[in-house]
Length: 251
Ligand code: 6PG
Image (cartoon, rainbow, N blue to C red; front, side):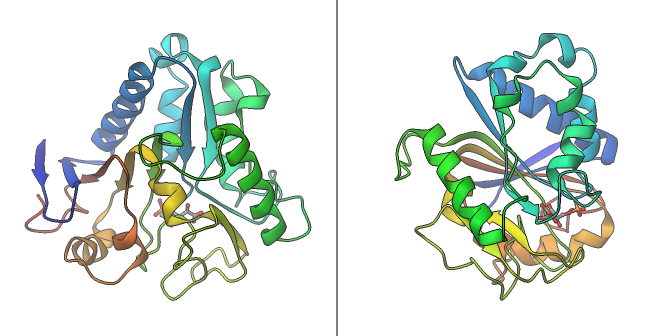
């Protein structure tokens, strides 16, 4: 495993041999964050296919019986504006992969309300939920909203549902916005946290695997104007990648 501090702020990269090692390392980082937090814990999940094996792993031993599940609150960085039962739902995926199989109080699972009229309405309600949980309506960098935020990288450089030339990129006030048009499949409206809300965390952990992501990782680390480049964290920002995804210079 190599850990190379990079030039862009506090962003750092961890490169491991393959997908199995990414799953193991990600799971351990999540569990370590949980172990560090004495009271209530907040974790913001991501969608897409990469985190699914991590979620499944969390529901297995030794984590299943040792993690203080009742103390953890689960949120989402973005979701597709589809019902929870729809196979494209990020929340539905995480519930099926692990949340439904663990002793988690239902009130600790903060699903985006995609049953509402439109993604903008859902965004307003989700922002209210987040503010109520946080206990203030302005984010204080010294008091992070989340203990950990998981992130993915799209093949077009998007992260969460913040797409290149898309909606919400410039938002600095609202914590959550509706996105009418997804620029990549699935082409359904989205609800997404904005950069400042995602940044309010002790650790932002990007999970990136596979050779097809490598050119985009290279562009992010070169500082190209892409949403994933603009994602920042008030705490640490860690890119956990397999060797296939890691460009020369990052490995
Ligand atoms: C979404 C995601 C999105 C995802 C990336 C990477 O709802 O589409 O949250 O931002 O993280 O597209 O997805 P993969 O892991 O499937 O490559």
